[in-house]
Amino acid sequence: MRTFFTSLFAFILSGLAGGLVAQQLAVATGAEEEYIIVFMFSVLVTFVVTFVFFVAQLMNDPLAAVARTGKWTLIVFVVLLVLFVALILYSDSSAAVVRKDMPMVAGLGLPGLVTIIVHWLFVRWRVKRGVADIKAG
Image (tube, rainbow, N blue to C red; front, side, top):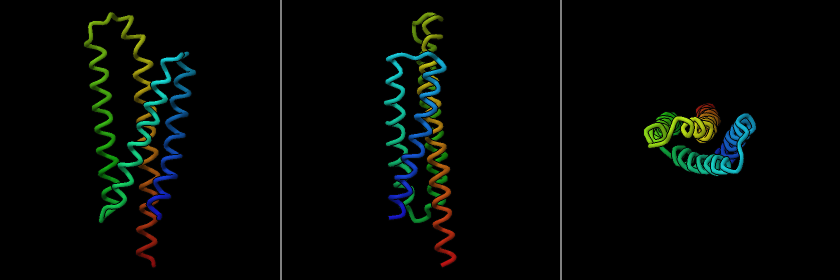
């Protein structure tokens, strides 16, 4: 039951943090309708990260599993983001089109990174508390 509530609260906190970052980027860049994709992607990242960390909490050594999961989730996300940037830079677009696409790339990347980091920190904190409670009891 503890694992479920940890994942639920981490989902809410990380989703809120990622959504706030996406909102601030939208305001700062003067975004319009196309930023709907950023908000949808932020929610998708939150769902995927919640599932991955939920499974990590069910492992035999949840503290080590959460640490590995956080590290590899960040690595995979950054690699996918770099590949996306490379796709934009090496497409047949002009420099003006690439400059126009960069706020969208930042909108896809930064909220996702914030979501993963907040989720990782919260779940790690809760798992450490749970391990300390088990050892004390």
